[in-house]
Length: 257
Image (cartoon, rainbow, N blue to C red):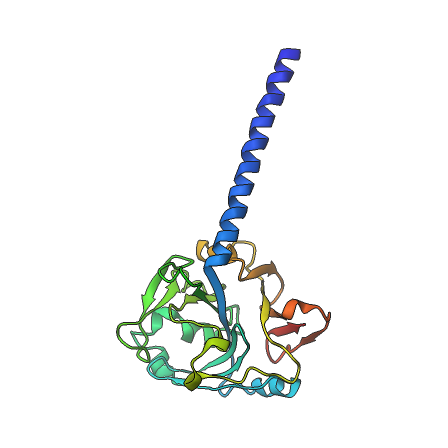
């Protein structure tokens, strides 16, 4: 009995060491992933014209440039910060959005069902310097008409999973404070925000993330937790002031700073 107990303890120690090594390996992989990718922007699907942007402006955010995505059927209103961007996106041309070239993005279905169980968000990453040839998740090459033919966007292969955010990565992404002079955007906001330091998705479908979404979580650029409805929490500048504003129900967004 004593001999069995010693052997059992040794076996437990080996198992414990193995688990410990696995945890260390996972932690190192997570740190490595966090250094290889950066959060580029979040889009929130809205009604035509994104009147919700007016509330953000009244709160103290300065609106930047907007654009129509020719051939994709979408248009936007945007708010830029030193390291990332918030985009309010809507369907501008339904026929373009439903066209053969665009339909695999499921933007049309995601937009029209955003009040009926579809996740209204898109999460965009960009590679950190030195990781330009690496995509954070399994993907397919999306070539929208508004980009040069030689350029593409990596879209997650879970793009038809409408209960998750659309995941995509752009190889040409930069921090807004590093834009060239001809593309510069207003970065000074009366509320004093500089950088987005937390992006947390609350989702009714958070308990079973796809491999693609799990891969994004492992970059440490996105957090995920369960909730009864979809919304996103954006934290600014480390949230040291302990303040928060909730833009729901008009916009599924909470800002903390």
